[in-house]
Image 1: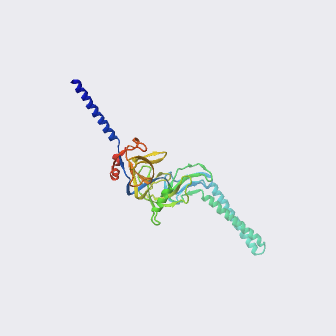
Image 2: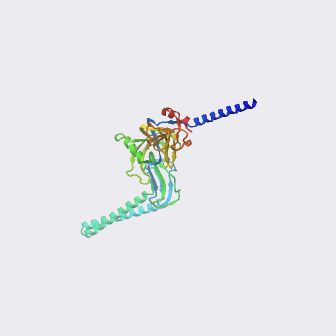
Image 3: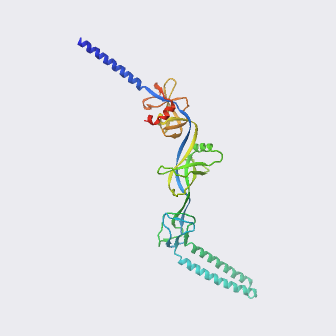
Amino acid sequence: MKNFMYINLCLIMAATSCQSEKKEKTEAALFNVTSPLVKDTLVNKDYVAQIRSINHIELRAQEKGYIQSIFVDEGQYVQKGQPLFKIMPNLYESDVNRARAEVKYAEIEYQNTQNLSEKDIVAPQEAEMAKAKYEKAKAELASMNTHLKFTDISAPFSGIVGKLHLRKGSLVDEGELITELSDNSKMWVYFNVPEVEYLNQMEAKKDNNPLHVRLKMANGKEFDQEGIVETIESDFNNETGNIAYRATFPNPKGLLRYGQTGNIVITSPYVNALMIPQKATFEELEKKYVYVITKDNKVKAREIIVAAELPHIYVVSSGLSKDEKILLNGLRMVQENQTIESKYQVPEKVMANLDLYAE
């Protein structure tokens, strides 16, 4: 009797175990699916940018000599016309004095020859030669004055002085770099845009209104001034498929400096955008795919083209239609042409809880 009871108990436990395993398998084969959400949206697109001053030049010596004085320091703001450097002028001052004396001599000689010519004592040609000599002497004096003037180096515009490459007493050659000067009142920000995005932006523009952009700085914060795209290059780069933009930003606080980096942010509207969760996609050979669920509940891989990216969301430009169902979870657990059991999730609910669904 005891043996009979024991056998019945084993049979009951075995049956219960089989039912439990069958239930687990059924639950394991139940996958969540959803459809793309169709909705108007705004997409922010970032472009790597280089920041340049609206006016940035190299200041070089126009004459050879020793640097006698430095009137500014690195990073100092200077006004237009403010003295920056002085090259020792002694040699050039001597040249000016000599040229001035030669002008005086040539002037006296010309006047005497002119008087003699008027009295027919000398030929008119001699008077013309004396005049030419006088004019030549004046031209040489003007040239010497110009050389002397070049020993004083002043700011051609208001801006910030860069690194000083030479110090007081240094011998500088003609054309040698002394420092840089940057006008940072406005900044030019350069960035490249792919051809497809360029076409979309041009189509979205209304009339001749300029394209407004924002600047995200290296610390992740947005610059407090809005920029305007004023220049687009005429040609695309055949190697990259990009075209260069130049945006102008006012810089009233002087926060931006020449050589900084950042990201240009352009907000583009997408009408009736087809949106899906990023977690519903997988990638192979740099191409993105989703698993589409057919009417007979089979899994089919489908390549999609992503037009834009949002947090946890892709905007799809092709590869899907709004009524198709896609696998939402368990992408690694299925195979091509596998038949599955699915539970449909409303797209609005899925999108609203993407942080919870994210794996």
